[in-house]
Image (cartoon, rainbow, N blue to C red):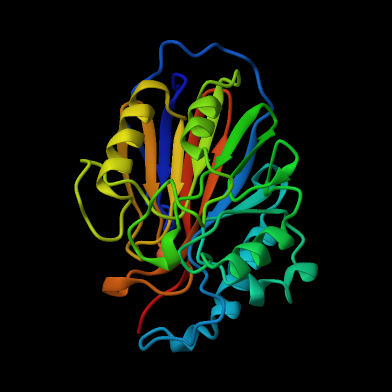
Amino acid sequence: MSMGRRQFITQTAAGAGLSLLAGAPRASAAETPMEPFVFCVVADPHLSEAAKPGIRHCGTAVDKFLRCVQAMDAFEGEDKPDFMLLAGDIHPWILKDHLEAIRIPIHATAGNHETTPAKRKELRDLFPSDFQRDGQESDYYSFVHKGVRFISMCDAGLGGEHVGQLCSENIRPSGQCEWIESQFAETEDRKILFAHIPPERNGGDRNMYLSRNDSRWFNNLVGESGPDAMFFGHLHLATEEYALGGTRCFNLRSCCWNFGNAPLGFMVVRVTNEAIETREVETGVYQ
Ligand SMILES: [Fe+2]
């Protein structure tokens, strides 16, 4: 199967075949050869939470997260991921006891469970080389890996409520919106954004999503100059995908618990010159 740049493939965990999705090509992007690589995305490990009914046979939240790590460790050759994105609601006060045993590098973003100044600091302290902007501590950051810019947006503030926002006294330093604009304008051909709370795709006023006005501002910016793909957590539903302009948007299932008895899992993303390919790995089912 031959694919144009920014066409994308999704494969189900059950290997039910490949389906070509209609990601609109961005005509303005330059063609710069890059080294293909794989990364994984894990959402909402909730590491300190007690197991919920229907999923207790899968063990503790730590067990369920480490099952994801073990699955990544088992990938070989060109499937081996370079790193994991951790899309919020992590509980860093538990993760810190397990980091030494986890070999795969982690790049994290804060969830609404990491919004007090103390918990924000705990998360920053676990990943001090990431949570920086211009050499100063920051709740949002970016890094470039093999020519692809990864943008960690912080949209959980205001004491942990479930509606997200981009400006808060708990999102430091101020000026994140201007920073996001500048990140989207950076020179890399490929950009990928990750955050905890997803935007409301129609700009609605809706619980569990980025606030109405922030969603409208963000969606408009993404439509004009957005990244190739964006990954969010927070919803605890089966993974869904939709498009904002030419940007693929993924709202990921949790690896700890989900509404509607949706299976647990994480996402594997392969970035090549021609495409971004995604598949999910199932790590637990409800009984
Ligand atoms: Fe959340």
